[in-house]
Length: 359
Figure (cartoon, rainbow, N blue to C red):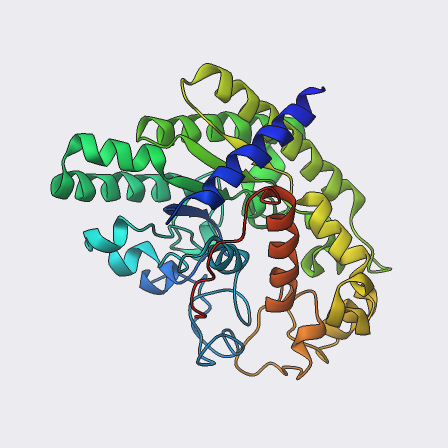
């Protein structure tokens, strides 16, 4: 069996074990794809979604700090695991009972590199998020003791989805230094070496079961396709993303061999997202319009939102038919499809737990 297949087989086995747990504890790290409101607590952050029309299709119809019209993939996965979606860390940072059940550290605009998203003024980089997890462990340790805290952290599961902003809000921005200072090969090396140290830091804090979500085809998101005269995916950007994913997968294999009891997993979400974009007609309600038409409607302002969804944006009624909510983020409908595919692929050998209450 080839190494990638071995990694994939281990992924299925490990994640099935997670699904079998009575009440799995999950800690989530990431960017705007999984942020559930942390940026709302950053006074000067320009990366917020606490205004209409974000949250219009979430329970209550109000903005929640999520960068979509409804739920994130993390919300759907949590429900399938039978737990409530972990709350934003900054909303519960001293509540030990909540911290013990798992929290979400993700921050819109965050990246692997601390310079990523610099023009958002405030955001929690991956290093910041790891430091907040360190604070979490300190609070837990003070309440239940060091041995119990270590056991708790060892048994929890850590979901990480980060790196998109290192491209979209860093390397691909011509006015930022990294895009001018580094070749892409050099930039990849910087990202991977930094990520290596970050994952080891989490390990030193007790993380043993880590699921790292690879990046999707960023060359196909609306903010990138608008750069193409024919509104096509940017091949070079997608090639860079595939190179990044490949290097992360190699890093995960190395760390699993280097670190005792590490069960790090690379979850390749790239093909899942690409298939949704290229073949929306195979996914229920998303079949009503082909992706390219959806996108062209969006950039003309006739569909969901143009750029970021602002209070004065025109919001379409048939949002459930759109792959993207704005120029960067999937819609609630797309997140539901992606979560279902991801869960079915990686948890197929485990029985379905009791569903969590709707948000």
